[in-house]
Amino acid sequence: MRHFRSIAATSVVLLGGLLATGIPALASTVTYTTTGIFSVGGGTTFSGTGGASLVFASGSGNVTAPSTGTLGSFTTTLPAGGKITGSGTFTLTIDQTSPVVGNANFGSDTLTGSVSVNSHGIPGANTLVITFAQTSVDIGGVVYTLEGLGGGNLAADQLGINITGNDVTTIQADVTTPEPALYSLIGAGFAGMLLVGLRRKQNGVASANFKGGDQSL
View 1 (cartoon, helix red, strand yellow):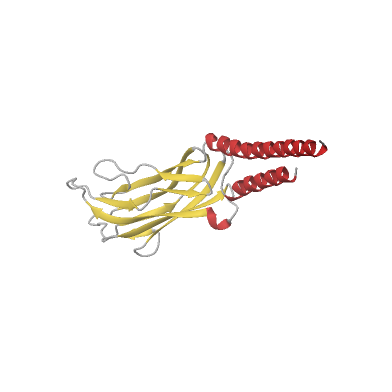
View 2 (tube, rainbow, N blue to C red):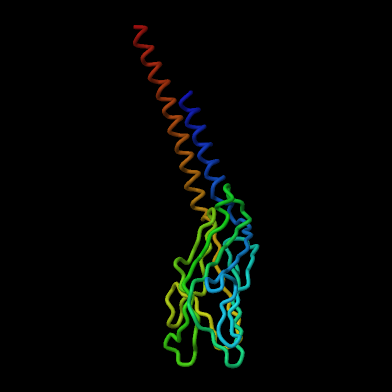
C-alpha cells in the first residue's frame, strides 16, 4: 500500500510540475506585445540618406490559439532623392503576458535577423531583406512561427521589405499551443504509472498470502 501511495504521489507531483512550467490550456487565449530594435542607431528606425527611413512599429495581440497574430509593421518613408542603404541586425522581442508560464523569465523570447539591402536580381526594385537566424520561438508551450517569409528570390528564412517608395509591411506569426494528442499522451502515461503501482501492490499481497500459507503447513 505504501508503494502504491508513493507512485500516486509522484504522478501528481510530475503532472503539477508540467502544468506549472510550460503547458497552457487547450484553445488558450494568448496575449502578447512586441518591440523591435535595429542595431544601427539602437532604436526602431533604420535611417537612410536624404530623409529616407524604415521605422518599426510595435505590435500586440489577444488571440485564441491556434491563430495568426500580428507582431508589428515596417513603414518605409522615401522622399524624392532619398535612399535606404546600410546593414546591421534587427531584434524582435515577444513578451507574452497570458498564459502565464510559471517562471517570469520564460515570458519572453527574441527573433534576430541580419539586415541587408540589395536588388535580388529585380532591376530597379531594391528590397531590404531581414534574414532570421530562427523563424520560431516557444514561450512556455506557445509557439510563434513567422509567416510571409520567402517568395520570389528570397529564401525561406527571409523577409523582404519594399524600399522603393512609401509602403507598409506587416510581420505576422502563426500562434499555436500543444495539440490535444499531447495531453492524451500525458494522461495515458500517468494512468499507466498508477496501473503499474496497483498491480505491484496486488502481486505483493498475493505473494504475502502464499508465503503465509506455506508457514501454516
